[in-house]
Length: 531
Image (cartoon, rainbow, N blue to C red; front, side, top):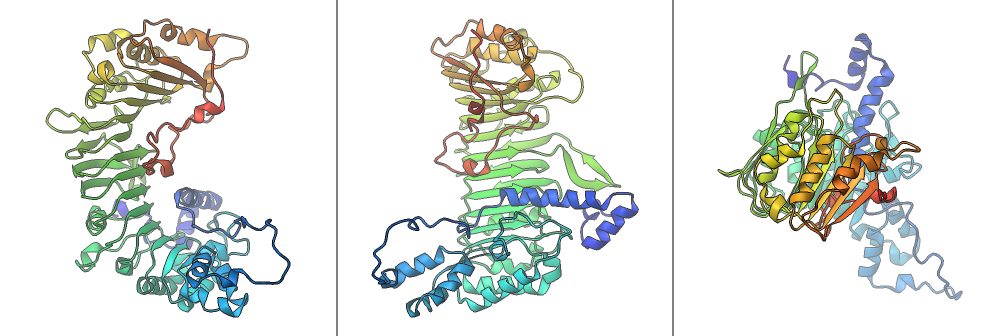
């Protein structure tokens, strides 16, 4: 059996039956796939309208003279009002007065199928195993057929698409014909590789497209003239696709600025030749290789919650991950990069492996693994102009494989960014190990222009009635700091579950937010005094 297709093309009932024959509880099957849906729904953009939104003027006093002043507003203003309402409420405006009757059909419409549920979607995601909301599916079909377009924004995330393949295909035909601008389209599995109709490539009016849990169309059969000429934001969530399919979508999106990939049903190989992309985010993905061949506008590259094993299966077993490679060829504007994992990833750049443009870097380090720590100096030497460094200390599941002292850092040769350009260092989940203290002490004693060092101490370091934290930090607080102007700020971590780095995918793509790694979550728990 082709290992990439072990769970593809199987209906929900057949999948459950197969797993039950293997001894797996039906509830665990539901749990696993609901977990996938939970992550997808958590990262999807919200609809721009909400049935629960408050009216800002609802409490304002109004003259009791019976005059309908709103209906006297110009048509353009009224259409704008209608376009900012959920589809159900927008349609109801036709009953307000004769002046409003034609406005619903002439205003750009926002349609979210969750708003058509009895609770307006307030109950959260519809779990697998629950009945498919057929009434909602029928309502979506009626709205799409009745409204002439254009559709400002359409979110279709609550339909079990396998049960409604005919409607699904017609929906895309209608949206392509009526000029949809933003589309969020999610298949509620199984099968998790339900083929997305190639009609999606006919939606040339799209500016934003987010697709979840599909098998993308075979782009080899898509007309070469197919394009997304206006697409600026592309999100792909737990989709099954070939490398060539992703390449095709990027090539056919000439103004695309933001690419977000959450999960991947196979190993991801990204070879980027793109003249428009500014931000790439890869989460819960097994990235085998990332090659920035030619990305002249790329400013930010993020990896978060990266998988350590491939989702592909080999005789029922996960394929162990080799070290992935990030190759930075031509990306002259790349300023923000992370989180990289020395020891699990290899970094390749030009002949000297130098990436001079990066100013903000995030790394995850297992300081209890000696061979991992030994990779850190080489990573830092690749970024000679680095100004801000974020370090997430990762716990290890087994015993420590050796400690690294200050002597290791001192004898390893100069690290240009530490000596000349580092201004801020953030160290998260400090556990007080000798390797962690040695690294921080080395930075403190060598960094000439350091202005701020923030250390967030792991909660496990705190015990009632002792001075464990003060003892662990003493080598750092008593060090001979090179920069006399530097502020050392200590915080107690609010994190209790040992999770990875704090991350906000919305801020990551917000270019007005200068440092998307500095979320200041640690300030919730307050400062630590060791004096």
